[in-house]
Image (cartoon, rainbow, N blue to C red):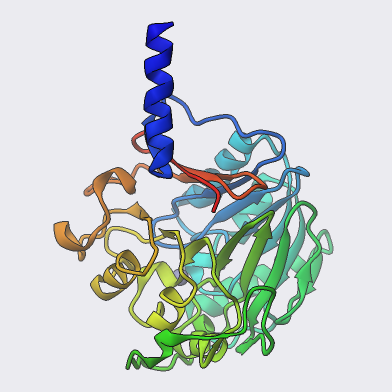
Length: 352
Ligand SMILES: [Zn+2]
């Protein structure tokens, strides 16, 4: 009894700080009412798998085309952990090869229901990697095996178990506040300019996920000038609990107006050792008001000891390529846990 009392005391003290960091030999089993989000490591691309309590799934991007299907294999491994045998929706943010390159290898390995994209490719340079990736994707669609949605800002994706609202697509962004948004954004005053993007990045299909009280933002590789369009002078999104850091943490994205303005509690960066994870973005995110933790899929070589997040929040430490993932498990009441498959440790964030 005494030991139990002490344990309870420890837990109460830990809870009082709002978050707990605990070592557990295996990831905690999600309850049936929970949302699971796997941040799959594709070495500096994107592959983020949402599995709703209703058992429906949404994969955002498919990783790279090469490496004998390495990224498709990692996605399928995550579907097995999540207990699903089909992906209902595959959303392609844009057609760069680190996002849409893995489509043919993915459909060879697992059934897919519907593809969602922003419409026509704008990086049409003959012989370029993006055109090859786009053509390969068009071939997959032409088989007639899959449903297809071209999404526009304001659209809601018809997945069951969470609300997915399109924020940006094909170079356009929402022009009206979403619930909780519409206030003046004080961070627009921070003088900041970044180069405008003329590539597929600026056409990224970005989404806001509402799950119970929780909001999760994933804008793909959307760049600075598009962020400004829905963050200044008014913040049309309101506050967001979890930010998937845009564009792997590259400089042309992640303005203060966005990162500071949405007031995230947790940010997750899908960088690689030598891709993304730029120092100014690491600093902007770590120092954002209200941020509790930055999680990174990789240690950033550029960031060094001074600018990376603390080692326990990095899934793939310096000099490793183990394909470790990060898993977010969220309850409808707003509490959530982030698990690092690299060190098998997790941190729980109380509902606010
Ligand atoms: Zn990218």
